[in-house]
Length: 257
Image (cartoon, rainbow, N blue to C red; front, side, top):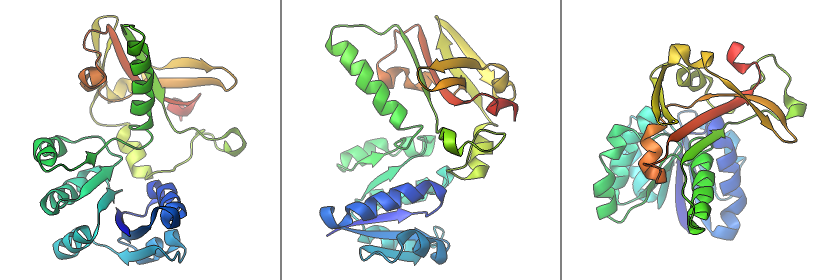
């Protein structure tokens, strides 16, 4: 039996928990779901035989370390700034770790020690960031395998409401913490390179620079620059590319709401 600890049972964790439970018999998994709200953890596990819902306080050092030691892999679905204490415990006790969040400087500092211990700390592996990374690298690898060279790279990603469920003026529905949706549109500067020119857009001006995208069979969308595209140039092997731009896609009108 392999033990998985999922920390956080909020909106973003719902599909993950359902997926793990559906695979638990076949893959011989025992899944502990920890959340500050025991009631929420119980609701997400639905009395499944291979699930163990618990009330979990991330700031309780003894409990956190005890549960991490029991696990083979830890999936942190906490707010991004809370991952680091979990990561340090996983490093201490030799446990693999997965998060969907962007890699923070504090997380990056653990990189060499994590590798030296033979552990896997997988970050940025949700929808965005995550699926966009994997799909981008699949295309880039295919081009390079054929002897091609990439000089312009643009990608667009975003969770979109199915047309039959698009029932509000914002053309958007929350599948993650609403507070984090707001924060994602506030601090920092969007950075990218376009036709050899570096571009920097402060977030208070971000929605003034949008573009329309036509997606065949799906219609028209709006897109805006997604955080810091420049840090992915080397990761994607695009140091010589003249354009490297990662964008977020939304339905038309989202930026005006």
